Length: 111
Length: 119
Image (cartoon, rainbow over all chains, first blue to last red; front, side):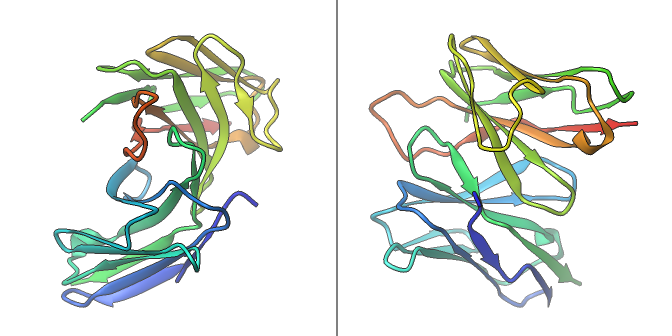
């Protein structure tokens, strides 16, 4: 299978809570990217973390990468209803952004 | 950031007809573009790599005669779904890479996607 795995498949939380999504992949990578997709829409790039980086922050987002375990996590702090979306990790192994996507996590943030 | 435009954003076609989807890089040249397919409530699956001036490279299980890819210029790749059937109904999305050979680790730039419905 192309895809890596993400867990949980679905996550339902209240506004203000933190949301953590995990991603595992199969091959060595150049980088790992996280994307958001609102229902029926295109992709929004969130964060790119290089294989030699362990943690990266962007606003309320925190991404970690453990290449020894071939896994990454995305933490959204102080979630908002507007964060409701599907979140995908994607790995770039061969360069030139030929991406392999994880299965995705559907996040629902309730007001 | 770089802009990738995909057209049309949605299309409905009759079974047996062909549909062409365009993917354009508006402000950069893209030697390589990628086509993905996404079924409802599923992830994106890489279909093929579109290479300017040469044949596309298809992923395992993707029918090259059904999904024709043409990358005739450095700013345009097209995906034609031939003899479409209801099971081809899906969300198709392209991405383009602007990086030069010396750079790695830049984000991919995606088009807005095309929702194809075959009736």
